[in-house]
Amino acid sequence: MKKCLSLLLAAALALGLTTAATPVRTMADDVNITLWTYPIGNWGNAETVDGLIKGFEEANPGIKVTVEYLDYTNGDDQVNTALEGNAAPDLIMEGPERLVANWGAKGYMVDLADLWDDTDKAEVNAAVQSACFNAEGACYEYPVCMTAHCMAVNLQRFQAAGADQYLNLETRTWSTEDFINAVAALYAAKGDTVATIYCGGQGGDQGTRALINNLYGGTYTDPEHTKYTADSEENVKAIQLLYDMEGIVFDPSIVAGDEINLFRQGILDMSFCWNAAQQNNNANNDPGLTNDGDEIVFMAFPTESGDPRLQGGIWGFGVFDNGDAAKIDASKAFIKYFADGEGTDDAVLASGFFAVRDTAEGNDLSGIYADNAIMSEFTKIMPFLGDYYQVTPGWAEARTAWWNMLQRVGAGGVVADEVAVFVEEANAAAAK
Image (tube, rainbow, N blue to C red; front, side, top):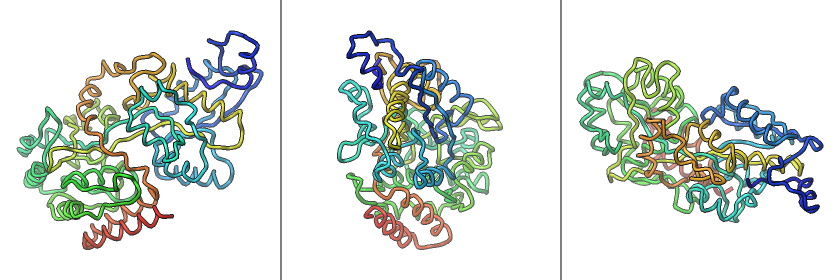
């Protein structure tokens, strides 16, 4: 098994000792590392993570791991404060928009390019690889799992309103016209809010971006990820459509997590912030059901072209450069164990998402969800994965500008004007 060896083991190799099954470190050179993780599936669950860490520590005597759990409300502030105070963690688990385009671009992270060999490059999804490296070839994230973000509908509500005729349940796709007709039918039957454009903060903002970009084929950035292009005619048309639709409400008081709860409670008939992990989880009922037992059907976002482009989610590990070679070495061992080693299948299963690679050190990962009907069905929309534009410079500022723009539109602002302000603000951040 490929592992990042410590200097001690390198010396052992020089003496001709056999090390094929030797742990990365021995108790003679103990090292303690810290992992901060955002709530990526059950990587935000202490009981699950404790079990994962136990397996790693047993396989690597001498390395001890302390974990701190972040959320998407305050997590970025916690990391930035730690960086300013020279108290950053050794490891962090999140996506390229933070690890590559933010902290990596600012020089805080260790280049992990040395962890990739030709086999790794052949095994890992090419689009994922591209998102984890910067233009100069430095890798600031070693990826573990991925998904296609999508939306979901309450099937029984659709059936009761006669709106299920607009869903292609075989392909999980529908057209923009289908979406318009479905919302109209649901609103006529209900006389109340069908869905919300949540815009109370950054959480889950990928859903509103994907909905707006897909409706008429707009884009969010240029293909090179150098500037923001959300002020296109197509996007202006899409936002105006949503604003004008009866049954669709721009709500500045909620974020995606609130929207998901309202959907599960049956208050909303559809959710714009969904993925495989959401489909599998429901504390109040069986997976794939609302709290009241209605069937949840995941769908690609509606498109006029018939070719949905879903925003992908990529998650993996990065290492902060705290100037301690021993901790960097141990952190790399941790990454290889969970991202390309004996712990990879457990790491992926804990995330609730899909592996970014088909094989990890000879271990076939293609069948880890063979007994999960929901995950097997979800693979239908994985081919719709679109461009991973979250690595565009100025991403953090652009996210804030996006939900502020939606709030202004919801308050009655002229759509074209407000989207133009968003693009101006986002591109100013990208140019810094």
